[in-house]
Length: 42
Image 1 (tube, rainbow, N blue to C red):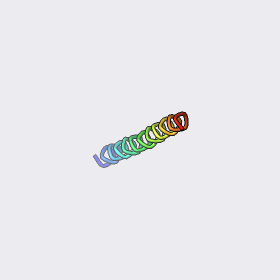
Image 2 (image 1 turned 90 degrees about the horizontal axis):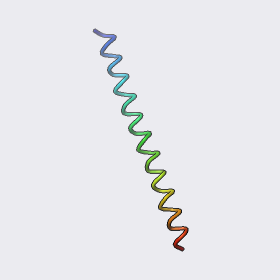
Image 3 (image 1 turned 45 degrees about the vertical axis):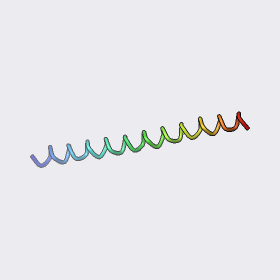
């Protein structure tokens, strides 16, 4: 019982970490695209 609950907790932590990581990468990608478009405009 104890081991399964800790395993579930680890899974949740991994999911949260993965979501945060994906969000950071996505924001960086958006920023780069906007920056390049602005560079082309000016």
